[in-house]
Image (cartoon, rainbow, N blue to C red; front, side, top):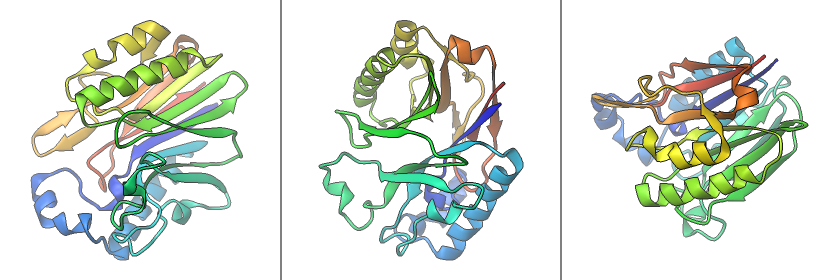
Length: 249
């Protein structure tokens, strides 16, 4: 059995999506104390210890910037049980955002119980460009990414992912914060072209902002994986996103 956790950590700012929190803690977008980050780390650690995933995939995690003074949040999660990790700036390789004080640490990354082969691929469109490609087992490949907030750019990114999945042999798992604010219709071409199964349900939100609740954090699998998989939504009080836990029998 293999278990995968996918989580948008919201840079561990402790902003849970309610309007009052966004106003009260707006300063944390500029500076977030170590005390706040440690409290959020404690909560994600509790989820990891309870669910025991084989691999944890994170978006919106900071590897050290002016906002965190600097503090690598992923390295703080590394333990004897989870010794293997990688963290990478989510912006394009030539983006100026990689060097600016407040954005140079904004990253995606993963944490795993065992060493896994992986690649870092970059979208050709958008600001957030990083895609992780991880080989979980022979013939089983995991991709995860953080898609653009702009619909036009997001459509270009989905087309690139469609081509990427099409050229990948074996079974596929695609996880991420898809930011599909226009609904599941945005995924039609991706799903149809690659004969994939959307495990997430449109009526189950994973993101909240004030009264708005949307299913943005999604799991997509090839048919062979979907037949033996179970998806669970896990509340995250330190973020405005819920986590996904995918269990493969």
